[in-house]
Figure: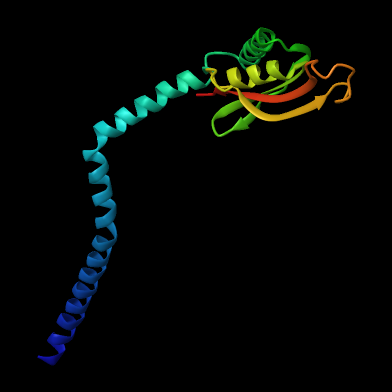
Length: 171
């Protein structure tokens, strides 16, 4: 009789161990399942948020349908128009090769321009409100001729060097 009980004891221990393993596995999976169910319940809200992000992306970023060189040239032309309208004279501008930035191509622009302080203020104001967004990465300003000019009422002449960039979608 004792010999018949040994396999039953091992079988019971095996079943108990499997039960504990399954119980531990369920306790690990339960929070994951609850999160997935919560996401499933919020699917409509998540879809709406995704649509808003895509709309914002089309507003602030050059589209993927444009070639990188087309986007760079379009941005360069747009920047030239902004500078000319503000009264800055561009002495040089250049489009640099794109860099990878989290699913986007970051296209850098270097622009050197001369003009008055008021024109520079106008450019900075307008650049901040453009779509697609023009990012000011760096700005260097130097005074032309110094502060000691013959006429104290003469407007200050500046030379500026802008490091700008725009983003182009890659997807």
